[in-house]
Amino acid sequence: MPVQVGADWDSKKCVVAFCDANGVERLTEVQREPEAVERFVRERGGDVEVGIEDGDGYWVVLWRNAGANVLLFDGKKVRRYGQSQGSSGASDDRRSARSLLQMLSSAPHRNAAVRELPSELRGLHQGLANQRSATRQVTRFCNQLMAALNRFHPAVMSLELAYSTIQTRWFLRTLAAAPTPAAWAELSPEARQAAVKGSSKGMRERVVAALGTELGAVSTAEERFARTAIRNAVRFLELAVAARRAAEEDLELATRELEQAEALRREKGIGQTIAAGLAIALTETGGAHRDGAAIMLGAAPVTRRSGISGEEKPQVTMRRATDKLLQLTSGYLGKQLVTHYTWAKAAASYYRARGKSTNTIYRCLTRSFLRVLRAMQRDQKPFDEQHYIAALKAKGVPWASSLKLEPETAVTAPPS
Image (cartoon, rainbow, N blue to C red; front, side):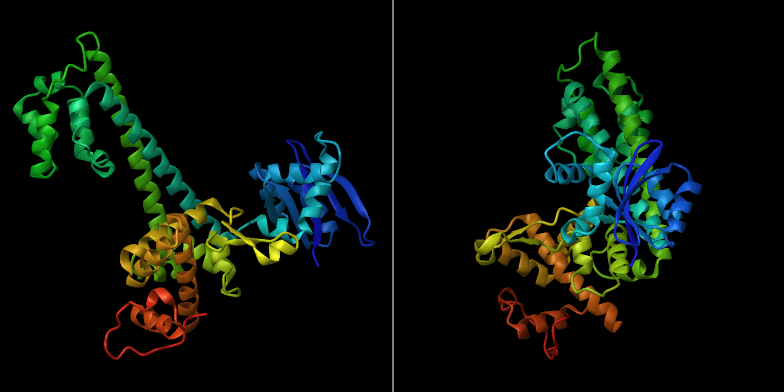
């Protein structure tokens, strides 16, 4: 059994709580130095499990490099747990360390902790984080550009262009050259043609017409400032799009280097982002638990019971104590399943008729498909939708009764 340690950190030290060989609780301090952390772990026999609040990556690295298994706890939950154990709400390092030690021994709190991924998966997880962060920045600067256009160039906003069009190189190049109708009028015919190069004919005609439409939104006194505002928004969006492209290229390379992620990408609807999240969950859980990957992705619900009445009417809620990046993967996968697979469309319609929300439907579909992926890994076979539908029909799944099978499709047992 590993020695369990609750570690409450600050900028210089960790106050740690642990039980000695006689089961007596001890408190001590460990300085913020690699040698001090390594010495503490070595003195405990090298097999140490540390519960620590999130928020300081350097402490996590110090404990991990010393050979400890690190579990991260949400800081608010640690404080609330500490307050529930006493009458004082004051902050106390020793009490926080004791709370973390007790939470390590409590199954509900332990299951809610975020576990450190192994080294071969941390890079893939960071790639997902980079891609997500870059995507959010693109959305942010895209909204800023649209706000500037709405203020100074409403004729362009009236086109109701899709986000994907606004982010294209030709559209950003066009706005940089002609941020206002007056700026468009100043361009030569050759410069206008070069500005809109790369767009389709229909889109080009619409944009050109809007660029030359003066609706009186910009006064003479505002002209210079309007040009600067739109051009600055264009520059920020160009940088954000370039950063997202670089993050996607890194993630693409990482998924191709990981055999399991590359195998997942062969299935319909699974791109590099979804493949990366699935590869992390499936590799980390190892297929030992039927819903292990679903739990890690937040696709398996939590059943809450309270007293006698709770046994009769349990409350089923969304699993919130999970990695947020992997939780996004669950939603992305559910949406792609509905787009590409007949069985998923039928299931989504059935759940929607029963009043389920869209996010709940996506999580249900993801959980079902993760079981399929587990069976695929076990049997080393690709996904066969017809055989899966036949298995659902054989099992008597209600929403599968209306699905049609191709002739001579064998009925097999559903994946478990």
